[in-house]
Length: 279
Image 1: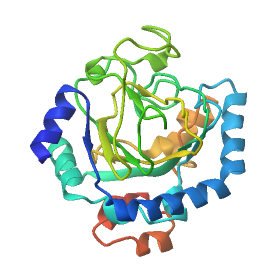
Image 2 (image 1 turned 30 degrees about the vertical axis):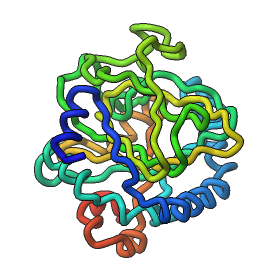
Image 3 (image 1 turned 90 degrees about the horizontal axis):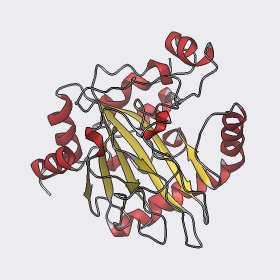
Image 4 (image 1 turned 180 degrees about the vertical axis):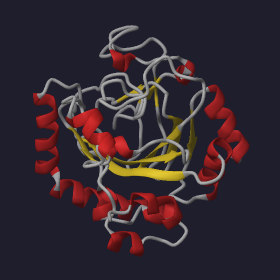
């Protein structure tokens, strides 16, 4: 699809899919690299999620593993993140100086729990730091889900509600309807491994159950406007302390990128990342 096609889908449906952005003969190696690090980090990520649940916060269900700092462990996804179609879309939405925030990885293990309906940060109302509803009708962040495993009904392709990005709120706040329940308009994403789903971060979506015998792997990346305040997700910042620590609220932390990792990234990616380099 052309950039205009992508923008049209984002405007009307809230999401679009670029199939086979990572070539089929390359995605297998990227998946194995990411999977290796997720397996190694399983115990640590489970402990962190258990600590958040222990405080009574709603977070991904059993069998869903999230690793927000995967780029610090493995950079095999990096060369694809500056695909012209994605950057042209970000340019059209945000203008000059758009940037990347957060390069994480997700594993939905076999028979994982179905998730809850939510929108991505900064619209997820379960996060201590979030934009309060009602929302202005503008996209402030473009989420992307990089499918390292084929997404379908068996593997647990993400569930979305087309057009929901136009709502002034979302079910993560606990109103509207049961955020744990099925929705009559829900649609399950299906696409080959190597495809990318771009979506307005306001879009309602949730984790689907993986009915296969193998984990379903993906990488999530956020493309943002330059003016979006990311400091509430930087542990140790004044905003993080004020909004998360002092309220004992649910965190949404993205680890900074070490200088050595940054210097090893492709030169065309570095300008989009340099604001997130550790001092």
